[in-house]
Length: 161
Image 1 (cartoon, helix red, strand yellow):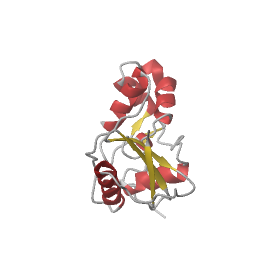
Image 2 (tube, one colour; image 1 turned 90 degrees about the vertical axis):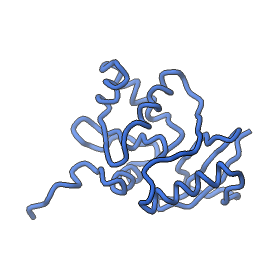
Image 3 (cartoon, rainbow, N blue to C red; image 1 turned 135 degrees about the horizontal axis):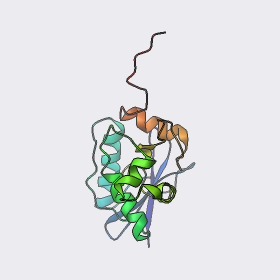
Image 4 (cartoon, one colour; image 1 turned 180 degrees about the vertical axis):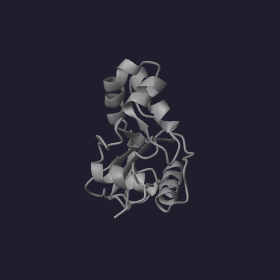
């Protein structure tokens, strides 16, 4: 049975689930849970690493994680983890990395079913035209995360006005 707790973050409450010594979900939720402090070592590590990420002191996560999904979904999530901090890729590029440029919609659907937000960085996938498209946690959170990472499209352009 999954163990769930809530932490505060700059983008609102985050629910974290763990089971058998692995993080199984990191999800944006509207309300905090009754238990708002980590108990197990893996929960403490996850909460600590997320706090470091939000403080701009961490770009990679080191705790074990696992989420249920199809083989294709797991391939997509494995590719998402390879997107470096501060970088974005398009859904088309994600499909190409999976070996089939025609699987854009399937890759996008799998991306949206990711239950381990931030750590499996589905927020780093954007439209081919640089637009911010779809994010289960909400577009405001996607924009905030990309801004934190310095990878918001157009962010490094200088303004003439």
